[in-house]
Image 1 (cartoon, rainbow, N blue to C red):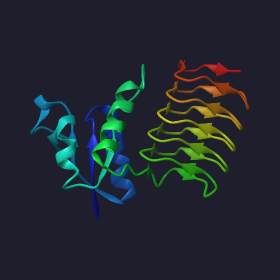
Image 2: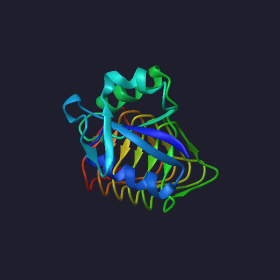
Image 3: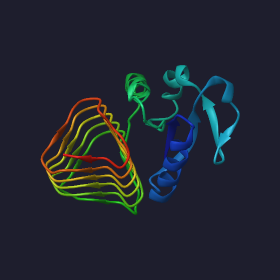
Length: 192
């Protein structure tokens, strides 16, 4: 089984660990986090280094995934994604076996699709996105890079979500609208 390292050891990391374990494609070799956490663990997986160790770790591990969350700003996830790419890691997409991803959808690099998410035909998900638990991405949607679509959000057909957006839990969008770059949509909103 291929080994992967996870970049960021907080709460989102725990959820991603569960998805990786259920998917069964990768063995988690360890987690990269703050220097002071070296030697501790997250759900039994050791913290093996920090961000500055990525150029060294890539010599041993080919695969990495950004596992920090994203609420107020995508800047940390973007920084970590760019560091991993620059170091030479392959950033695979990870999808829960409990999710449905249409064979006619396109999924970018470093995307995580959580439990019970549904991504329909002709949807496009850009690099480094979080598609959280119970999200519905309808047909012909374009989710640009570095977005977090939170739990139980519904993105209706033909919606364009530009890069860096945070879509809160339970958000519902009208069809065929555009959500501008770096937008923050609070939980429970109806976006028309």
